[in-house]
Amino acid sequence: MKKYKYPKTILAVILILVAAAFLVSIQCFSHSLLLGNDSLFHFSRIYDIKMQMQTGHFNYFMTNYGFNQSGRIVNAIYGPYMAVILGFILLLTKSWFSFQVVTSFILYAVAGLGAYGLFRRVKVNQWFATAGAIIYLSQNFITGWQTDAQFLAWGAIILPFAVMVALDLMDGSPKKVHVTLALVVAALLEMHILSALFTVIMLLPFALIGLWRSRAKWKYLGKIALNVILTLILAGNYFVSFLSVFGKNELMPPFMMEYMGTYSASFNFYNNLPNGVGIVLTLICVFQLIYMIIAKRKDLTNIVVTVIGGLFLLLSSAILPWNAMGEQWTYMQNFIQFPYRFFPYAAILLMVGFLISISQISNDWYEKISASHGDIHYNYMKIFMEVVVTVMAVAALWFADSNIQYGVDIWNNPKSSPIKRNMIKTLPDPETPKKYTAPSKSPFKKGVSVKQVRSDFMSKNLGKPLRDISESNGDYLPNDSGNPNFDAVGSHYHADIMNNHGFKKHVTRSGALVTKWTADSGKAKNGYRTIPIILYHNSTVKLNGAKLSPNQYRVSDIGAAKVKEQPGQNQMTVRYQQPAHFMTVIAVSVLAWIVTVGCVIVKGMYKWIKK
Figure 1: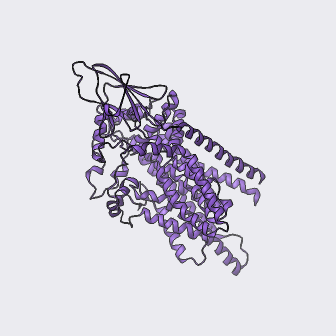
Figure 2: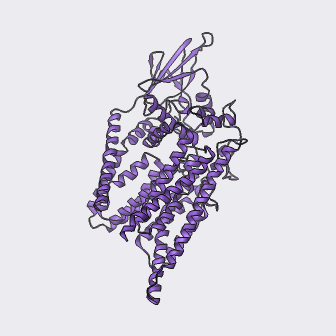
Figure 3: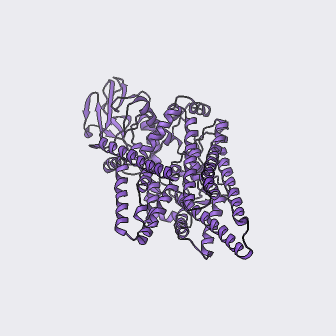
């Protein structure tokens, strides 16, 4: 049997990579770009990193190239290292189309291979694991990056590795608690903070079970504590940035989703809604929950993953009174926003349980038949189950491809906007106020046609299409009005930042953002003029060579600078005063990543060679 082990594994890897290639193939053949609700936000911050690398003018905190060169802070507190990786890929690919194809393929491959490794970890056979991996990589919370630029997808590809860590924790042996715990949590902190929080919540019950089972409880807790310390070191850049920005500024939170229940997980046969649970995962979840109720013989791992997965399924569903809960605790409307975000955790855990269950069913059937009829040559129940999961994998892949085709059709329809807005438009709520529906007016700047937007996104000028769109995202802007009025953010952003005619900006070698403009001698006023630059508490401002104290300038409701200009040429230079020893924290963090990942790779290679 051993001589067939690696060829079967290689075949599984090939099939997963073929499935990943299949999902990006329709986009490749049509040469289309898929744009969604979050595309402009993430493309802007990734473009900023790319330009920093290209010019060598670095600024960890300020966005000096993306977001209309407004200097607002985004990457420092939203997936900083992941933004660097994606910015580097954009620098290499040199076009938004190639960037989307390459990153989508990488995401599908990592999601599929991670899920395959997890399913093999719980000792299901190669075929079950391969089919399960293809089902997982085909789900909306994975394909959402390609179709809508949803960053939840990058968090979701780490979940299989997080569940492997959870199973090690549940074992209770201190030897099973290793640095992968810190690596998983730190990686999520550098990708998607909400996914990191939900993952820690998922890991907690596994750790409590492990502590209960452990025969060396203090040593077990000590290993976890060491992982916590390592996580703080690995993600030290994020924590220091977070404290620096949030500690001294009141920022605009993500937009409020008043009717949260509308965005809970819901059954959708074809899986073509952002919060849709397709027929494949619906059957898996229903089967697993029913089986664990009626099964006489239950495996501990199966029980635990099913119970915890069922709880996450409950959290993601409309069974909970999300609308009432949001009204009671309004911070949930900004922080969680979409209860569907709990569903990836339910999906991966219940899929683990499902594959364990069908393996157990096929083995029990074989033992029962062999006992009554003697040895039989084939496990017909296993063959039947393999056919079933194969059909499910093909169906999931086809539904995912159909969803991608929807985005391609929008791009290729000359009469439609290339930006797909299905998160809002396809989920109507009769009680939803107008302010939460997709705007009916064109999102493009005045004078910019749909044809031009398509052409600009396909051009080599990566920044030009980002300037075509007149919409804004208010996340992490200063909330200097003291009232998070989300209706007003868009109009303020248009007036203060996007209406930047007459201003010229450039970035210095030290990363400072310089803005120049001319004030007519006859029109220069004694009052304050709004400059399209965002200022924070730690920002330092120089106007015409003189450093301004905070009481010498003002800011708008969203933090745009207001200064007294002089007749003729004016120049304003803005920097962000980063925390003391911040570069030391960055150096320690990067070094810790290199050493930790290097040790894991060397140890893994040693085990593989020895085996």
